[in-house]
Amino acid sequence: MNDMPVQTIEVQDVNMAYLDSGAGRPLIFIHGNYSSRRWFLNQLHDPLEGWRYLAPDMPNFGLSDPLPVDISIEAYAGYVLAFADALGLQQFALLGHSLGGSVAQHIAVHAPERVTHLILLASAGPAGHHTSEEHLSLLEKFKGNRDLLGRALAGTVPTNRPDWFDWLIDDAVVMQENAYTGNAVALMHSDLSGLTGNYPGPVLVIRGELDLPHLITDEIAQLTADAYPDGRLLNMQGVGHSPQLEDPERFKATLASFLRGDGMD
Image (cartoon, rainbow, N blue to C red):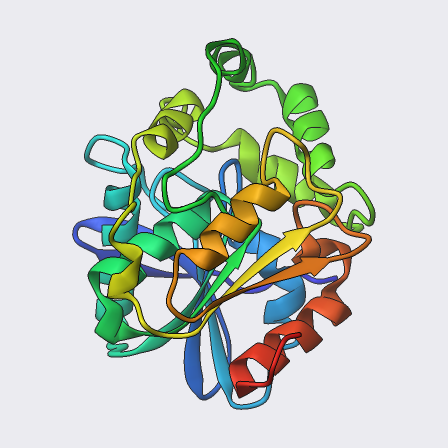
């Protein structure tokens, strides 16, 4: 797999790096924690016909500038929405992975007229995600520790790590230090309970059956799907927290079916 040329755009005085491929209706990919645009390289190299794929590094991540305000899911969502504005995108589909799923939900709930489709991949639920004090302390030890970060990321890609997995570790290492625990705390304070009905569009929740038990459980995924008027859940067998990396061909077919409006049963 080859890397792709990175573009940058100024978004509210923050330089955001992003990848851009394909042509047609826009689909914005929102990465998760300890992550970057490169978690979607398989998709960006092989976009669906009629779709333009955009994958930014959110502020604090990858090659983008630090977030200039306190860390919150709302702040990340604001910058992704401003990124779409800077590119002149009036409407777009959203795909959020892990923490990025919470960011995508905030955009869909607060700007529903902008979002045509919502795909939540191994996403935290509408009420956020709780991290224990013990685990928060562990996250502090990850700072600058490439070995620990590599082992942690490997657990989120349990079945089929790409040859370029080291690139993902490289991107994790450069995440802003205040985000190591700051992102987890932001997820604990994110709560869209009672607001998800604001988004009437189609929602696909995808959970890998081998996801880590402290991340996204069957119950969390089902509650997320049930929270939306047009939500549905797909349990993807044989993969863990990162189906887009572990089985990109099956993931592409799933994405194509949903975007076409096919039934997912």
